[in-house]
Image (cartoon, rainbow, N blue to C red):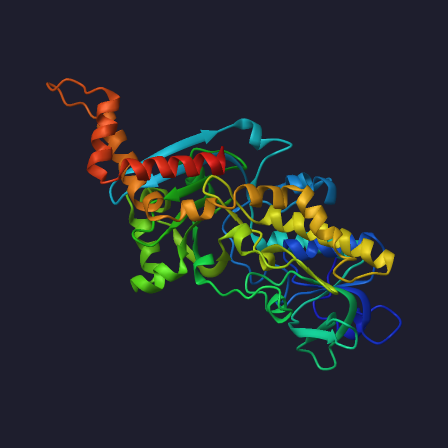
Length: 454
């Protein structure tokens, strides 16, 4: 990785010519911003990558899996370079009640060798690595700098973004294109009138602890060896607050946390850390982290509603990508964000380079960004799965179905001699009756799941 000057002045970062004027400013050195800056720099454009933290990834709360296939074109040797913790070779989906756990457990050796599938990683390491590639290509990284607002040119027929203001003295940066990759609560998208962020139901809060354990203990408890890792996604871990849980293995620590509905959390008067403590004490989870030392606690807001909460993606002089554009896929089976951020950021960088070459950075000139997204997995997956967040966060999916599944499986495996075994369909029908679920609810949810995932 190249040596990065974390605190150059914006004046030093600007390209030669007019004071503080460059081709493009990218705000946010997360995966989306760094991918955009990398593409612009490779296209020979002067680009400044602003990061408000002391280094890329310093302020990120993350406890997930990075799916790196999107890096094949951006960083061809990424599997050899990327700073990973473990390659995920075992994926579990777990349904919990207060005292039960039903787990679907899949593992494969194929995910532990090239081309791999996904890996656990620390965002501080990963973000700095990807930003380093942008710097290698010619982008200028400016850290410890906050973009406090947009600069507009209102002299024409429409208001146009022409740069950003920063919190440094004389630190305004003028650019033909601004790429807003400034995170879930994008103040730049709001200021441009692209994203009002008005409905709290579209957001969740993620909380996470990093629990240190010896590497050999992790491997023994999770049944892995070497750089193999485990990804556990949990339904029914949050009580009467819609959400979900997760456990991910790092080399010598375990990330454990919850994703919780903001409105339900507020209405229930519960503290997130109380719910996390309950998860950690669950009989299916406690043995995995027993004796561990909590090294970190963090929390972060997540854009949960996907396609239905996306902002306008393009305006005159600016595009929006990554979490700032709600490009996080929370679809139950698929929980992805970094790969969508990289895909959108790369598309934004390519579109900005094309617009700069054509001398047209209006909304029309930047329109190829939307076209690129529409042709890629980013919008294809989000559009097809647009109803998934609503289905996954429903009360029945969160509470009724985990109880129904766990009770049914417990009865199937229980031996009640001398009572004869009941046919499977009788057990299922009896548990459906006990659950209070109506046939209409089952049919509606089944149809919704078929339409969403089928």
